[in-house]
Length: 622
Ligand code: PEP
Ligand code: MN
Image (cartoon, rainbow, N blue to C red; front, top):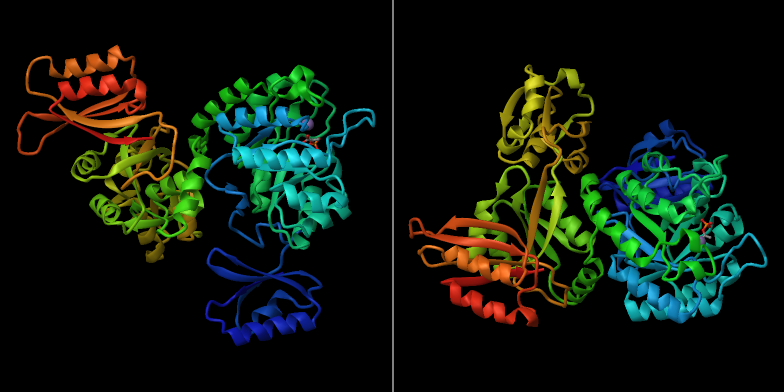
């Protein structure tokens, strides 16, 4: 049973309610969810929903139908994010966990850790206690292996994950690692589940070799009932009659679980397929299907690995895979962030004094809001602003740490206002993030698609949804200033014949439903956002430089500058001109280069560039 408390409940009423429940012998848990306070009665309930509804301070009471309570979506509607060190599993950023099946030596673990980190892994995994089918196979380095993992963390900054096979190891695990894994063979080892339920570390719970999703969720319930809320579910393939792969990867478990539970999901394509060449295709599919994280076995010398060599990727293959994930993730509203760890360090550093806020344009739920969450994760608070200039002013004055501004859309081109503001203000581009623009059709819960008579959206959104409007001539388009205000108008109007064009996040925030996931004409609709700040604190690998420059108004002037880039073999990924205010027919050029032009090797080029341009400024290196 879940009791949704009245927002106006007094502390006294709440205490009374809790003492009634405790007198009745109920086992309860209190959580905050979607702005509501909820008391869940997870065992020994004595009353009906109707009886609870009559009680003071209770807005609603709903019976939880499933056998699992704490892990269910009915109990908690919002996605759970599990933090392992600085890494959040379940947010907008795909978390890649990688490493060898077993820790074999300090050198082996360090070699692989450095490789996987280079290619974008943010957590390191390696077994110290190995549950092997044969008692004669390598059983792991045990405590020595944990010490090596601890060493890897200290040297690389990667959080470490390892398997716990017995409650007797709990103390050592608490000491040396950041998260524990329950292996497939132990999914229903209830004493072990109770043990990790009492631990202070997050738990990666693998699905049993032949377990149903319901049994798996009941095991997760054991851990949460024990008091540990940081549970991540790991699908690693199940036994079927199919012999061509080691197991059968049940990717349909992802959408099934997303409906049933709020817990994040990691996919392990290595144990699922057991064959190296099958791992990357299934990893790509897992991200496309909505996985929050991947756990991949990587080995520098798989032929001589002490366990699971045939399914381990070579580091370079792992690198190829993460590049693919970088492209796939935005399609499903996520990011593969190669700067994740460096960013987390900088943000943690900032936390020591300054505000950790990022300004975006529009209301909550807008694409700017999403871009801020995708770039920074949850550690930086997105702040809504009404104009781009407000964002620049806020960054310049220091009232926010960062700004997130759209600079370019794949269909409609550059957002010129922001290029002009970049020229006007002395701020730096410190990063970029690309978001897929997906226009959802959203309306009240009671609205039927056939009953929609009006559609509210911003003018650019209408221009991107022409086919939908053509196919629905009975729907009248009503322009509003911004998409997020469209959702708000629909919410506030109580009009069940009105719908808005918006994001799924807005639908969530305004308690509306998504009728159609995407109604835009062209699904290849992406917006690139630049992240701006007064300066970048901390060290960072630079792959791109944005510059602005002007040349004299004489023949071949631009060509002279382009020639320099060509001579130094620099790839230009954007070149755009903007008129210079007050100087008719004279232009400022914006360019993005795939290079760090302040690197030592390019210093002669800088001298040449400055010689050939009248004005030259670096807008950012990131
Ligand atoms: C492992 O992760 O190395 C492992 C033994 O996995 P599973 O429990 O899924 O077989
Ligand atoms: Mn393994």
